[in-house]
Image (cartoon, rainbow, N blue to C red; front, side):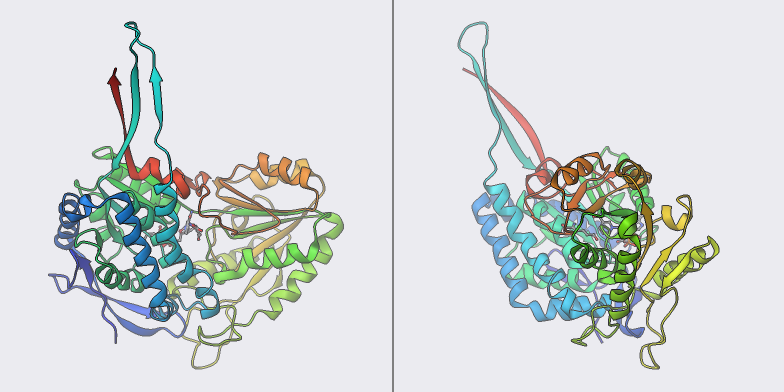
Length: 486
Ligand code: NAD
Ligand code: 6OD
């Protein structure tokens, strides 16, 4: 049995209160082990350790030394790949074939990509005229923002946490991470890697627990936290924004989505089916960028729908270690209740259930797990709640459209604005439509294809700010202008 402790000032520590909660594997609801729940005492200790580390050996490192250290962290994650893989798959139930291609490699890459991009980013400089004719030089100077609180979700636990920790540390900050209560394992393991790579104590800290009246709230309301970076639901983001407003702390928000897929009749239909299958069903549909609304141009609607149904029928549900399996359970029984609620609501709202719609019989060994069927609906009204609310499960609604103008309007008719996927072989149309989409990320003939130098984030209720590449610099550093009179 594993035990998940906090990682504070370079050491694993138990909660003073002795309070723990259970971490269960969603494959069969078996107990993985107890997780210590941080109270105000542990959160305060972690934040103070992070604050102190800002003026310790960490602050003396040059950018090049920091880059070298973070590269080592990336290498060490790769050396301990199998341990990270096992931990991630136990916590989430996802197939190893997926975690070994997405979660763990990206978890490592996040420590290399940002430090290298930032190290090569120029600083702004302006020479100005002055009345005495001698002029002045303005030079931008960036310093770390300070202690960064990182609040992360459960769907891609290592990947999404390191997407923030990587750039935060590359910019010279220190961090206190509060991973999701559902997935404490890989963040806890990362503490060992930090120690192995010589990252000074207090630079990387982890506290476990829940949101309200627990570690999440204690961390985001702590006055010594200088900025908060969050990934999770929009409603949680609102609560964190309220907490951040006290003391005027900066925030970066990566929140929910209700992303459209737009399939034009001039697409390569097999590519569009393959891409939409991934965007709707990979990671059991638990990807913020995932497609829950698919709009298909009428001439190919029937063919596209029938190809999607054929492919869904081929999905293989199974344990993470099952080499044939490409579809795992949802992250928890609680999340399954939420997704199942929407499956039932779809029926009530008049959907035609094209495939799926229920809970599969997985046999005696797995029936206690959080399994759910991959599902396709048609026939819902554009006002249905199933069309408007984020479900975060393996499901999509497919609806025909007739004109480009109509589909742009439909796709944008949402409070969210994270991502879209456009399928067409007409590049002029692809650009025209992409430019009109109210989203932070528009993919054409692809989905979740990531270049870590690019901006990542959402429009509307999907987020505030951009991270990725040099964009994190604005958030993770304080920019000072130094004006030198010549
Ligand atoms: P969630 O909002 O329930 O939880 C996210 C984190 O916030 C967890 O660590 C949780 O404990 C913490 N939290 C909850 N309430 C809090 C509070 N009041 N104060 C401080 N912390 C609090 O989200 P989730 O269910 O873990 O993840 C799924 C959601 O995340 C979906 O909406 C999905 O779209 C979104 N998401 C967005 C992105 C993105 O990049 N835009 C990426 C992944 C997931
Ligand atoms: O690829 C990334 O950097 C990223 N943040 C992906 C988010 C996926 C959401 O579930």
